[in-house]
Length: 107
Image (cartoon, rainbow, N blue to C red; front, side, top):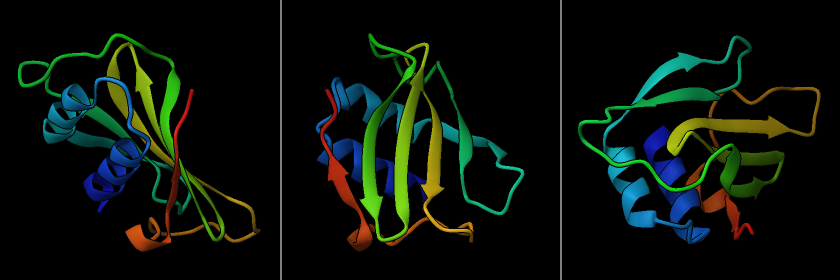
């Protein structure tokens, strides 16, 4: 589900260097899960299977859903996190369905 959510956000946001991000996503592995119950994950990329992008340290794509937002982060030119945040007292335990996401172009 993480890969599908990340791709949905990246594609709809028309993220810069999308072809490189697609290759990174194919080479991505979840390396850490959030300590709370939410589905936020940290991602590592196999650098031998992908190239880095020319920007860093920012969310590259974001989408809203009924209870919050989801963001894809870049650090040092590599996909690094798929983060969810929410506007209620109750943390989500999974990412929203793709049809529930309204993606935004950044920058």
